[in-house]
Length: 80
Image (cartoon, rainbow, N blue to C red):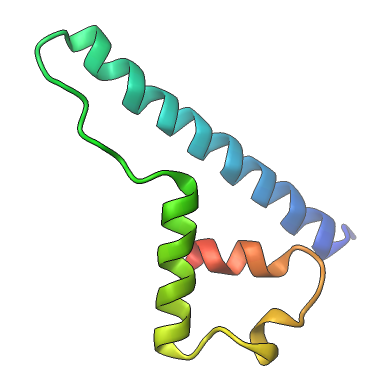
């Protein structure tokens, strides 16, 4: 049986890789299109800040949710 934290860590790494690929595509597509200017997209830091603000607003941020240890908080913040 696989260690659940290792599986979770690998999934988070995979998500980060896919997000980076999506961001790269957002930059390249307008360049290939040539007609349209790229629309400003929020950076990963801005998106993370929005998720944290949303978590505070809905009560899912705090000791009960952030003291789980390991890599869980990053995973769950992206899922909100």
